[in-house]
Image (tube, rainbow, N blue to C red; front, side):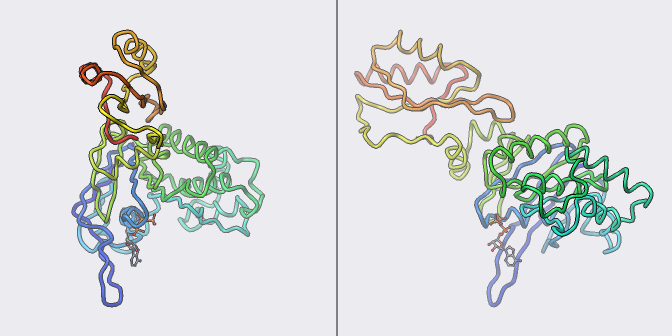
Length: 337
Ligand SMILES: Nc1ncnc2c1ncn2[C@@H]1O[C@H](COP(=O)(O)OP(=O)(O)OP(=O)(O)O)[C@@H](O)[C@H]1O
């Protein structure tokens, strides 16, 4: 189901001052899409995601999910509609003293799920998140990754058509993060659930998001297909996020001069670097030494960066640069390093 925000904004009024947490924002998330929202702390991500299910009411604008204009529903209708919008949180929001079974049962009871179908539904959900052997264990005794699996099972209990994920992996180690993201991806594929994933980590975006929006100071400043935002970031903040992933720095010992330059290039296809470098060694009368290189898979599509130092005559370096600029699938980038 699609999500549509039309000129939605949120202003908080605190003692004597106002905070514009979200400036007027319009956004459409398509049915079945995983939309990632990234931004630094305070950018307005949580505010935006909480406006989608009206956990926060917008100061202005309308929120539409499928054919329902949520901002126009009565409190009762909204309560019912919300059962079809699942949400998972950084801190899992489980009742720690209750068992896994009871935690899921709680959600089903609250939505008045047919009583006799509850045990089968809980089994189905535990199978889906891979924890059917943990039914009688207290939630407090689970690992972080297991807790989030139960958080996901709870969020899916009422067959939602939308799942909102608020920093869902931020409390988890990298391996557990990967396994939770894989679970979310497979749920997205198998159930066709539309997802909005908010995070401050580009690692999460690159694994899971079909499209990404970059937030800063209460605005979405850049959006696009995840691969194209990674390969051609426009805004400085977006470039910083990409740089964070590749983590390249020019070594302090290198003093750049016209005869000694550092060049960073990106490859838009797989395994191209080795051949390309051989070609550069062969065709240019320059000394070339590699400083850093890395390939990342952005939504399973490779994007490689290579940083190298070239030394020699300036005209020859210029010839090399123009050769790079005329090679398909390879680009010089200025913001890495
Ligand atoms: N209930 C509230 N009352 C007043 N100000 C708020 C409230 N909630 C959020 N804000 C303010 O709105 C701005 C955006 O906050 P928000 O939590 O949406 O950002 P965020 O990008 O999710 O950051 P974080 O990852 O740190 O939660 C911040 O300046 C924050 O202080």
